[in-house]
Amino acid sequence: MGAKVELQDVDRVYGDVQALGPTNQVLEPGTFTTLVGPSGCGKSTLLDIIAGLNKGNGGQVLIDGSPSTGPRRETGVIFQEAAVLPWRTVLDNAAFALETQKVPAKERREIAREVLQRVGLSHFVNHYPHQLSGGMRQRVAIARVLSTNPDLILADEPFGALDEQTRVVLGLELLNVVRQGGATVLFVTHSIQEAALLSDRVLVMGARPGKILLDLNVDLPPDRDPTMIGSPVATALVEQIWTVLKSEAQRAMAEQGPRP
Amino acid sequence: MSTERVTTEPSSTVESSDKPKTVRERRLGLTVRGWTIIGALLTVLFLELAPRLGLVDSFSLVPLSAMVVRALGLLIDAEFLSQDLAPSLLSILVAFIFAVVSGVLIGLLVWRFDWARKTLDPWLATYYAIPTFALYPLLVALLGIGFVPIVLLATLFAVVAMISSTVDGLDGIPRSVLRLAAVLQLDPIQRTFKVLLPAALPQISVGLRLALSYSLIMVLASEFVLSTSGLGHFISNAYNDFAITDMYAGVLLVFVLALGLNFAFAAALRPQSKRVLS
Image (tube, rainbow over all chains, first blue to last red; front, side):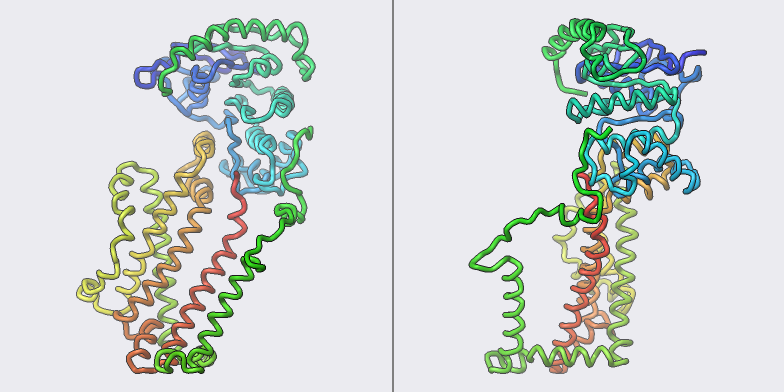
């Protein structure tokens, strides 16, 4: 089986800032890869380029071997702030992607109920987003992403605004549901522990120009639980990432100019 | 799975649990609502008693009860209904619909295209400083008097409130929602009707209420000079004929109409105004 996503010399310049240096990477199908790095290092830019929301200045993105030209329906994106529509119920939010793809009402509601159950929201189908906490809203957004059964999921610091415990629980939930569906995941975060706990592979990114400094495999069993964060494997990994990121963060803070 | 909590109760107790019981603020022994009611009662008393007691001469003001009786009489008077009330309501409705449809369309264009915003911004900012009504001699010269110039003036007056509120609403849409629309590859129609307009609706509804008031104000004011029918014409006619009770009855009907429309609107738009994310 070929690569799910292949980046060939992808780069991005904003004005005279090289946000993303020429990047070459391959994401294997069905893997959960985390992209970790300090803020402003270009990780969201890279994610946007793969999502087709932003264009690189050079190089190309191949998805399933063919060059990407823009957003595709089989890619699901989870944003930093939960992209829920406040005038729609939880059920209609979860069904929204299918609705825009003209799936008949009965069928899309059925699917929406099923994915809401997977993210633990079956009791809240008739609620409106303002009645839910931030973490539950993000679950609604995740349910909507799952509803279209994507083969590629891109998550841009989806739990960044949540507290530590909620973040770990939701992260493991996400890992669990995508493992069932077999989607390839690229998960952007600035939390090193989150990266170590959730992924099969961690890419550590440095800033200006944004480039991948380290490519690590996570040697933990496929079924993760919160206690693994204390395991020797995870600890060693976190330490390894920290060593690279510490000097990188110091350098980034020292030269931080205006953001693009 | 449930490490989080719902911020409000799921059932119908949402209403009551939303607002914890607080001690009502009191000023000089009365709640704020109490003072509002006192103010209204005093106004009613003054309007009733001042003319009766001779505080105000009876050519300037008639007792409120006389206005109410006459107003009720007008409401069962077929000629008044067909010659005065119906034309006014029709003009208000047509002007309001024109203002809403064109205002939302222009608002979408201004928000979408930078050149449109740059062109229109100075106009939008200064528009309500210009007395639109001063245009009426021009409109009489161009269009004569009657329905068309009245609706045109009222539309012109109301449309800018619609444009401004639509643009405000669209500007306030979170970036993640716009990015969602891009990711889902919505076509322009879906994007407009399933994302942009519903997301901007809380602000647009503020514009709707303003546009309705502005349409009503301008239709009535125009009818004073630009019409031979309508509620405004009825009032100015009564004034010219010293039919003081008719005049006040007309004014009273205008007040009731304006308040009624405003409350009806507020009630119709209430459910969605709550569904705003903090």
